[in-house]
Amino acid sequence: MNDAAVAALHKWTDDRLDDVKGEKALKPKVYTTYKLQDEVRELLTEHCEVTEWRGEGRTPREVLLKEIGDVEGLLTGGPSMVGRIDEELLSHAPRLKVVSNVSVGYNNFDLEALEKRDVIGTNTPYVLDETVADLAFGLILSTARRIVELGRFMQEGNWKLSSKYHDVYGQDVYGSTLGIIGMGRIGEAIAQRAKFGFGMDIVYHNRNRKPQAEQKYGAAYRDLDTLLAESDFVVLMTPLTPETLHLIGEAEFKKMKDSAIFINVSRGQTVDEEAMIRALQNGELYGAGLDVFEQEPIDPENPLLRMPNVVVTPHIGSATAKTEYEMARRAVKNLVAVLKGDAPLDPVGK
Ligand code: DGY
Image (cartoon, rainbow, N blue to C red; front, side):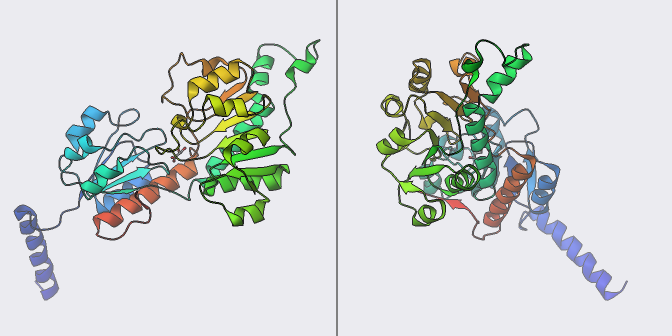
């Protein structure tokens, strides 16, 4: 046996002994609450010992609490599939170092509980901005031009040349005024489409003014009430925080034009849904395009599902194959960075 072979044999033996003694850093244990894409699983298993939920949707809470006793990393994800990360959950995972959300929103994190237990939370910004902006625009167009409703009308054997022809008129998107509440990166991606694709006038409301966006998109800053009164389309893009909970309610719907269209691709709880339903039923709002709901999955009895002037999608803002993959990769990088003792790309905090 030559020296190299002897050294290799010693190393192999030492490794096994270390493993047995538990002194060697084994791959850290990670739990993922949803079924990963194959490439993402490969990336993660290079660095971690992975237990993956292979059932429908995400791991049920009661199962999750039993599975995380010795994990150091938790990957939680899929749009609309992130569960609450709170004190109860953290108390079941004493070794946990990082919770990596496969989503830009992290309203499922109890930030105080994470901080108290020195657990880092991360999200996946940037990679989904354009995809979510596409969906917001899809909802604007389909609600204004009544695409879903009229498609159904035609599938039922109708055609526009009837005595009620004018009843199927929609509204112009081109040249109208768009109000964006929450001018973050996604808000700006929507503004870009509005300005350069549809010649819209843009007004916006945000915690801080955005001089660059004002210059680039000709966006004019407004207080919330003025924005609501001026806009033909109101797009809500704020994250869900204690300050934005039910940001739009009865009073705000009353301030909008009766001809206004309301779009929500942020979080359902930013809107008082009952007030929105009343505004739609009373003709105080022309229509709504909604990707998010106060309760998800939505109650099949929710009247929003039966209103012809409402276009709904099941929380799919970022859900294209490419973007979901990019988000999962980013979430894995965040998770692995923390487990290796490095700084994650996207830590979130208070
Ligand atoms: C997110 O990532 O938070 C979005 O809700 C995706 O649609």
